[in-house]
Each structure stands twice: as structure tokens, then as C-alpha cells.
Length: 414
Image (cartoon, rainbow, N blue to C red; front, side, top):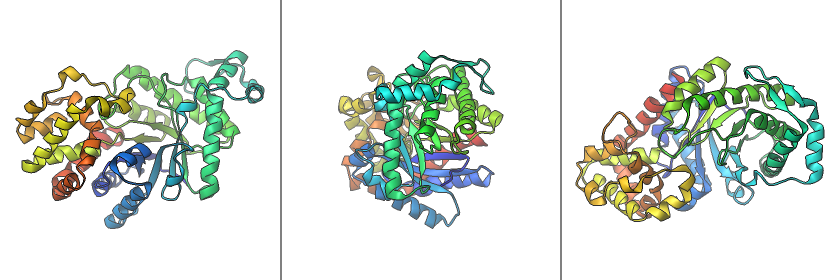
């Protein structure tokens, strides 16, 4: 199964924004962008909202059917492993195999020795076109990379084989994710990770490495923008060489996780894609849920009061909501406005506070991050929340579509 040169993962917590998301993708395609939409939802999100993977497939299929358009689309089993993959196998055709928990665990000594011997031909100065400085590869460096990553690759291979046995060879897209780690992978590490994936016959089509800086949920990138751009460019060069060297799929490309709203790095991504004529997969952080809140706020009345109530309860449950996302949020709790203050705001002020417009003085990244992880509060309201979104579908859908197209797709691709 092939994947378009550019693909965009659209998170949709409550499964109501498929049509609006598809409209944004359609606009980009009409402007000449070879773009596929990938609906993604993790097991954690399913468990909180009360959905199952088959619900995402139904939303995707129905959105495409209603649009009546020939658009490439996929359903991503997001951050799966052997413990939870089975529920995703039938409805999904894109599998994000998450190996972060296995990084740093050592493979068997015989496997490590085989790896060092197998790839010992690269010892010395490894020149990769597009990277200025050669990679210096010693036997000690090879072994260190193997000790850190080989076991993780073996686990990725085991998960891949499990999916392949159920779905059949060539019937799905394979992504390997290692972004949720403490340190970014260096170019030589990525090169030999790809070598190991090829050795273990994992036909990886997108790979999500860890980049420098913070990729917090729903807010802009925090870090050295220039360093990120260099890492991104270097990784493209490594992938291109690895594809030729190891026979990996020719459409293999980088995947940027929690990539939505990282406005400050979009210019660098765009430059690198143009320079190298490369593709990319951008996986969102579920911001359509926040656009729903913005739409409800703009609707005013009971809909805006519902948003204020969600903020109130999220504020009261700060620790419980934030703990599962501690590594991907940075909230200054003391800077959060009190719920009674938020309750007094007019509806347009509430919308401006949540909307990710950094030029607006009312925008508050702390409020936005808290509400991002507060979708559990909305889920607990059940039909009250779902009905409010459906009753205000026009204003909500406009926010979702405009957010994806104007703030994300246009800066990246148009």
C-alpha cells in the first residue's frame, strides 16, 4: 500500500469533525498538493472517550462517502504495541508501531555481535550526500547504537509480523515511532536504525524520530529552530541514503509527531522539503477538539457556558488530567485564570483565549494546554457535549476547517 508524498494525520477526539477536516484537505488538493488524510486515534483516547477503533473507520468511510470525492485516506492505529494492537487490526490500514519503551534495553549478545559484524563495512568516515560533516563510525559506536536500539527494532519487527499475519503482506502502511524519548536520534543512529529495520524485513514507510526541542500538545514548538531545521534536513538525507543502501520502500519519509501548531518550524520544514524534494507525514495533536470549544464559545449562550464549565472542572482536576501528559505539556499553573474569572468573560474573549493566534493579546497557552488534556471532562458530559457540538456544527466546522487549512496546510505546502 502506497502513501501520498504528503500526508496529514487528523486527530478527532469525538469523531464529529471528519467532514470539516476533509474539506480542509480538499482545499489543499485543489491547490495542487499531493496530500492524503490519515485519521488517527490512540487506545488511550478511545478508553477515555468511550469509542473503539472501528468507530474511526466508520467516520472516515462516511466522511469520504458524503464528500463524494476521490481522496486518498487511511485510518491509523496510533501508538500501538503487542498488548493493544488486535482491536485495531481489522479497521486500520496504517499502523504506528511505538517502540519508545524498548529503547535502551539490550538485545541478546549474539544478536549484538551479528549486528556489529554485519554493518562493520561502514566503519570509518561515512559520507552522506547533503550532510556536510562525515559520520564517524567505529566498532564501539556501532555496538553502542546496537545496544540502544536493536532490541527496539526486534520488537517493531515482532509487532509488524503479527499485523502482517492478520492482514496480509502489502495491505497496510507501517510507521515506526521513537519520538517519545528523552534525546533526539543522531544521523548515525537513524542510519543504523533503518539498517536494522531492513535487516529484520520491516518495510517502514514513515519513521518518527525524536527531534530536539519540545513538541508540547496543541502549542508552538519550544527550542532552537535552526537546530531543528538542520536535524530535519539531515534526517531526510539519511533516509534517502538508507533507502538506496538497504532496499527500504522508496516512499519512506519522516513523520513529525505532535506536529500540529508547531508554526515556528513550518518554514524550516517547507524549505527542507523543497530542497530535497521529500515528503512528510505531519501527525496532529488532536486540536480539532480545541476548535470545537472555540466554536461553542463563539456560539454563545448555553454552548459558551458549557465551555466555561469544562474549564472549571479541568482546573479543579489539574493533577489527574495533566499527569498522563506530563512529558508533552508545560503549564504554568499559577498563571491560569481562576474559573470565576473565565465565567465572567464574554463569549468572544473566551474564544480568543483558546484560539492559537499568538498575535492576539488574549491568547493563553496555559489555558489552551489545560483544555487540550481536559477532553476527559467533556467526555464525561456525554450527550450533553455531543449534542452541543452537533447543534452548532456550522460554526464549529468552520473553526476546524479554517484551522487546518489556514494555519497548517497553507504554511506547510502552499
